[in-house]
Length: 227
Image 1 (spheres, rainbow, N blue to C red):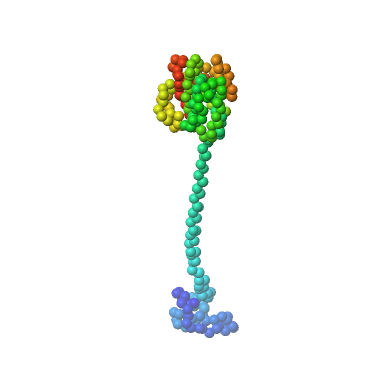
Image 2 (image 1 turned 90 degrees about the horizontal axis):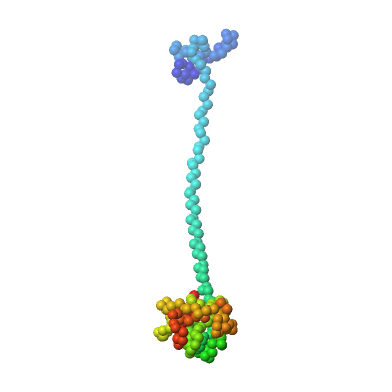
């Protein structure tokens, strides 16, 4: 390369004889001749290697987006739980009346007049699911009263409903509305005089009657609803 602009020299100068120092003459671009090296401002530059082309860059590969299929959990519906109705098991109903008792179970007559003997206890099997008991008790003189119990603890007490008035038709049915009837009057405990203890009737049961009546009334009507 020769000259300030380092342009390539187009002329090749002959070598210098070894006896005068050897080497090669340089082309003097100012004089346009081959000249001694010290008269030529010339520098040798290392050959420039051909530029290396960068390796081709592979085109970016874009992965196709993968969309996961939506997973929808099947709705789980709990099976409905139905509570079975609780129905009382069959149970015995034991009762007596001074004097004549007519007894109904859910509106069905099951005892007729109790043989007109309060010393006899009438025992009736109440079917499972029995809702009510209703009765009429007729006194024919002297002491009056009614007493009863069930095998599972129901007893006659002030929770019974009693009336001295003749009720309307259907009063013995299970769904009869007796809310206007008064609570029974408790005459005394089981074992009181003149009856003493009556067979198979709970000792916790009470003798009852319609409230507020003078003794010697003829007939009362009583009901008990089993919740």
